[in-house]
Image 1: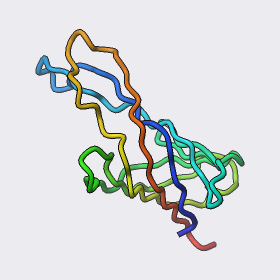
Image 2 (image 1 turned 120 degrees about the horizontal axis):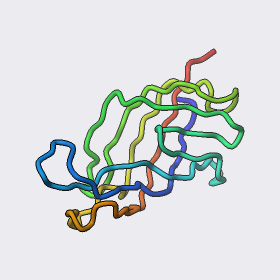
Image 3 (image 1 turned 90 degrees about the horizontal axis):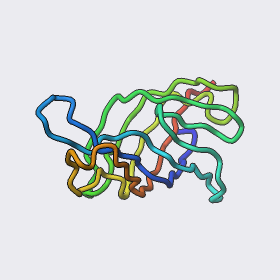
Image 4 (image 1 turned 180 degrees about the horizontal axis):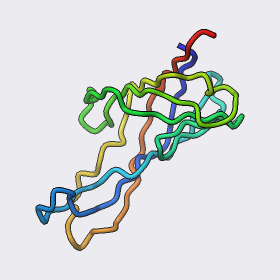
Length: 138
């Protein structure tokens, strides 16, 4: 394990027609928007659509979902395991090969109704998580 990076931000959802064309609607996940913090509590980067994790030093990784499991709390986003690939310059995140998102609090899709009159409405749901970043030793 290279580092544990706490994330604090929002999960962004939008009310949309379901993709299965049943004439019903759902809160669709759009993207995360979160700050990433170091062991001293200082902001070291950000997490956003892609999904990307970008360090303040310009190093950046993109994740691809490998596994997911429901969080212990019903209102929390799932725990994830993602493969990571460097898509930025050399730096703190450039050697990361996988990310494990655990200890999530909040962020689950809204429980409020999403119907035809709400299409296009967006909401941001607060969340926190710990992102474990793993890298090869080299």
